[in-house]
Amino acid sequence: MATIKILPHPEYCPEGVDIQVPFGTTICQGLLDNNINIDHACDMSCACTTCHVVVRQGFNSLNDMDECEEDMLDRAWGLEPDSRLSCQAMVGQQDLVVEIPKYSINHAKENH
Image (cartoon, rainbow, N blue to C red; front, top):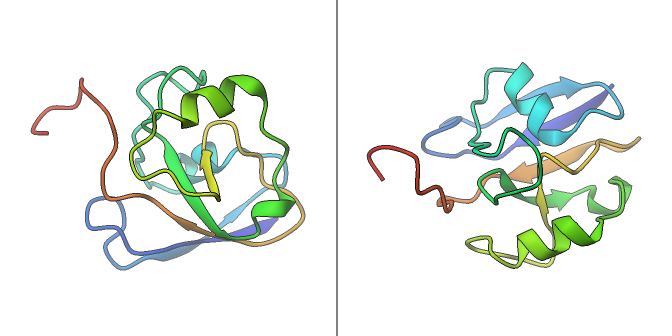
């Protein structure tokens, strides 16, 4: 198990939280399994950027990005060098610190 520290986000976890996630689980699935309802409009198929996160610590322990993820990330709001699509980033042997960006590009989400 790895610990993922989620930094405070006004919508998903205002206080921030530490969660335990099995190795090999995607960050997105780990968040969802721990009641952090991050957007994932494409049902985790690497077809949108709504689950974009910035990995502040532990980035190098994640699996390598494939070409599809790299192409999709180019469309993400607030892209940074340590950005990943959480539906594609698998938790490795190292604990992580993750920030969920304030905004995402989710045209289907109501009230945005």
